[in-house]
Image (cartoon, rainbow, N blue to C red; front, side, top):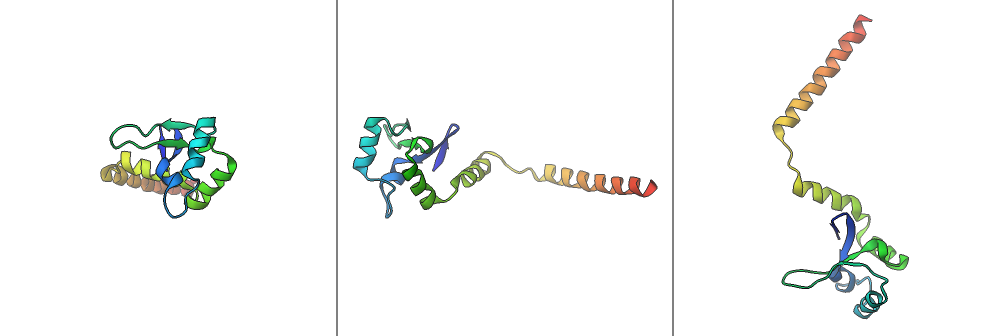
Length: 113
């Protein structure tokens, strides 16, 4: 499960392989031929794998995806942010101190009133 651009996708391997496949290989091919699945990235070339848009799947397969992986949208976003964004310890210290100084300043203003 991953995002391809802004599209939530599942890989071909996750759909048809493993101990609990979501659908059979024959079913996958037939649905692609009929245009019932949107393959956003074909698995052609060295090291590439096909990605299928989850939103275009029939509901029975969406339910199986949710059953197998749970609510992966938040987990995928967490991994994306972890991969592309770094926490700056100096910025964290600055804004933490700024917040606490602001809280103290507000308390002293309330006492004066």
